[in-house]
Length: 192
Image (tube, rainbow, N blue to C red; front, side, top):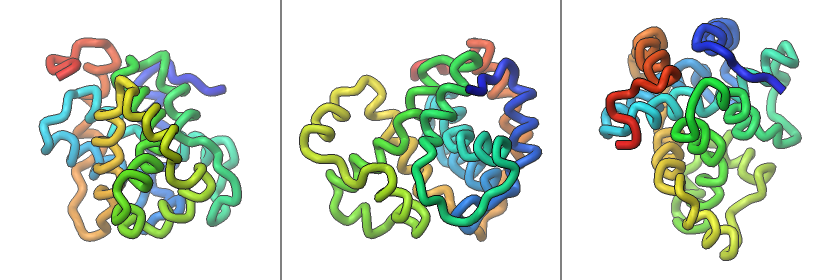
């Protein structure tokens, strides 16, 4: 299992694989910075902005491991768990928990908000079936009591919205000071 020891390792992974589309119409890099920008614009904590930026890092880890992406996936590779585990030595649970829960947040929203499922991108719709489909009532109730429920559902909203191919994305490097600050635990807005 991969575990990042430094922000430089994370940046290197995005440098190598960030331009891959991986089942969406935009690159992983574009999706990451769009989600982080949406989080910043909403006034999210520094940790949640970093979670928005890195939430799909598990996909890039898979690309780095396999060397290529071969179209639609036939199995759920648990990118959310892979990503959260890889980031755990570098970032606190305020970053890794929303990363780990963003797929569960999709399943919850599909169950709790009937119109939500119809608005999913084609890739998110296809992956939903692999990820267990909409939550049943017991799963919903349990998820709603999770301490990171709100952060995970906020991240899910940015994940769904941050897929525009006609926006001018900020450079990934814009987020480097934030990544370093949050990795070192010096966030001025921690927990806000």
